[in-house]
Image (cartoon, rainbow, N blue to C red):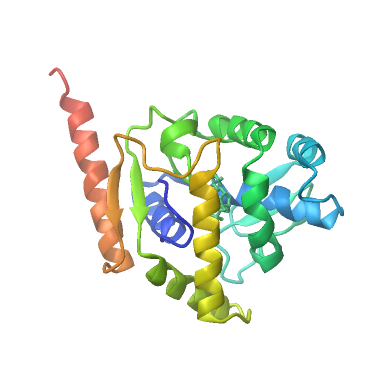
Length: 227
Ligand code: DC
C-alpha cells in the first residue's frame, strides 16, 4: 500500500492487517529512524556518505507496543525506544532528503524484502508496489486531497500536544509531496497495476471495507486462475 503523507495508509493498513490476520509494517518508520539517528549523532543530513553508512549500521526493530500510550507499535534504534521521537518536526523536515539517498534506500529495502518475503504482510510506504514488491498480490495506492490530508495530520498533532497551525502543516505536506514524487530514485507514484483509492470523502471504515473488497477479489482470482 503506497500513497502520500497523511493519506490514511497507516490507519487503514493496520486495520486491514488486523482483519486479515497479517503482519502490519510501516516502512516510513525506517526512513524516520535513520533521520532521527543522524540528528541525534550530529551527522549533517546533507552528508550522504555518513547518513548512508548509518543506515547500514543502525539496528531498527519494529515490535508490538511495549507501552500502552496509544502507539501502534514500538520502534527501537540500537535498542533505544524512539517511537514518538521519530514524529518530531525536525524528523519530518529531514526525512525527505534522507529517503532520496540511493544507499539509504538500498539498506532499508533489503530489510523490507526480508520482512515481507514470506507473505502475510500489509506493507505500507511510497515504493512498495513499484520497487520493494513489484510482484505483490494486491497493490493499493491510497490518495486524498492535500487539504484533507493536512486536516488529518493537524488533528493528530494537536492530539499529541504538538503545536502547529493548519497552514504550516499544509505547506509542509505539499513540500514533502513535491520532494517524494520528484526524487530520482523510487519516486512516489502508483504502480501501473495498483488500484487507486481516493479517501478524501470516505470514512476510515469505508476505506478499510473497500480495500478488503479488493483483497477478496484478488484472492478469488488467484484461487481460480486456470481452474
Ligand atoms: O509515511 P511517512 O510520512 O512516515 O514517511 C516518511 C518519509 O519516508 C516520507 O517523506 C517518504 C519516505 N518514505 C520513502 O521514501 N519510502 C517508503 N517506502 C516509506 C517512506
